[in-house]
Length: 515
Ligand code: AHR
Image (tube, rainbow, N blue to C red; front, side, top):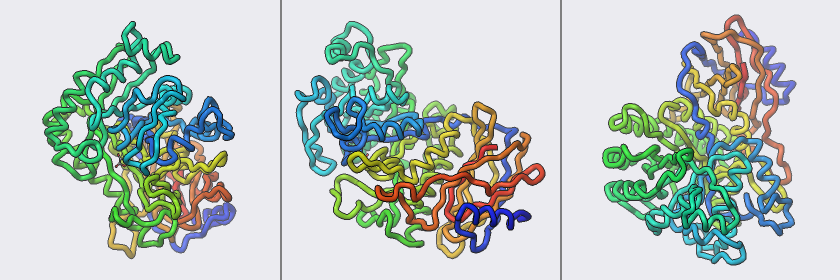
C-alpha cells in the first residue's frame, strides 16, 4: 500500500496500536447499481421484563431520586434518542407469553403484582405497562412492536389489547383506555403473535402453531385504516428449517413477517457459554465464527421463504440476536446481566453487515436487549450509565438506516492460524437521502492491521470523513469508573488515490466512512 507510512504516522497520532503486519483486501463499491432500501427497522431493539431492562433500566418511577422524565431514566432516554432507535419490541421474550396486559393499566398503585416465572422468579409489580411503553415510543419517535400472549393467553385477550391500543371508536376497549387517561389511540404498526412458541411460548409443534397463528391473525383487527398492522409470526429457532417450511406452507399468506431467533454463544455450549470480558483469542474466534453462522441461517431460511413467497411479501425479522455470555459474577443468573466488550462491537457490526446484505428479505432485527440485559446498548447503576461498545456501533451505523444499499464486492483473506473461516475484512455500503455514500468496514484481526484498496464505480469520490471504534484489547470495555475507555474517534486512515481509496484499518476495528 503506497501510503502505508503516512497512515502509520496517522495511527501513531491517534495513539492507536500499530499493525504487526497488514493483510490486504480489495473492495469494489458499485454505486451505479443501487440495491434495495435497508429497512431502518434492522436497527431495532428489544426490551423485556427481565432483570433490569425495564425496572432500574428504562423505568425508575416518578418518585425516584434518579433524574427522570415522568418515570423514565433521563440519561437512558437521552442516550436512546441520540441512537434514533427505529423500533422497540416489548414485553418479551418468554415474558410475553405469561403477560396479561390488563394487569398493567390503570392507576399504578392499584395494579396487581405477579410472579415472573421465567426471569429470576421476581415479583413484577406491573408499574410499567401499555401506557408507559407506548408513551415512551411516542416520546422517542420509535415504532412500538408488541408481542401478544399466545402461550397462556386467549385470542379474546389479544384482540381486546389491539382494540385498546389502536381503536378510536366508541368501543369498550377504546373507552377503557380513555378512562385511563389516554384519549387518542397510539400508532402500533407491528404485532407479534407469540414468542418462541416452539419453546418457552408453549412448546408447540409447527402445525399447531400455524393454526393458532391463523386464528389470532383473524382476530387482530385493523381498527384504523391509517394504522395497518403488520403481523409477525413466530419463526424458527436458529436452524430449524422444518419450522420455516411448515409455517410458510400453512400460514405464509396470512403473515407480514416471520421472526428468526439466533444468539451467538461464544463457546457454542449453552451450559458454559463463556465470560463477557475474561477470554482469549480462542473464545474470540469461536464467538466470531458462531456469529457468522447468521449468514447461512438467513440464506437458507430465505431460500425456503422464496419457495412459498417468491415476491418477498413476507419479511424475515431477526427478532432476537446478539452475544449471550455467562452472567457477571455475583449477579442474579436469571437477570442475564453481562458486560460488553470490543468483541461485542465487532459482533454487532458483522451481524448488521449480514442483515444489510440481505436487505431484500430482512426487514427488521432486534438486538437483545436494549438496557442491562445480554448485548445491551446501555448499562445502568443508579443514576450512572455506561454506553457500551455495541451502543457506539449502532450510533456510527445509524446513517445506514433507511438508506439504499449499494453492492460491494470484497476480496479478503481469512484470518490465519485458526480452524474457522473468518474473513479479515467485512464491508457494507449504502447511499443516504443526502446522496452521500456510507461505507462501514470491520477488521476482525485482533493482531494486525488490514489494508483495503477500494474502487468506487458509478459515483465521483468526494471528500472523505470517518469515525473509528477500536481498542488495544478484544476484552476492552467501558465501566462506571471508566466509561470512555472504548469510544468512537475521528478516523484519518483513509486516503483518496485516483478513482479509489486506500484505507488502513487498525487491528480490531470498526470504521464508518462517509464519502
Ligand atoms: O432474550 C432473552 C430470551 O431469549 C427471550 O426471553 C427469549 O425469547 C429467548 O429465548
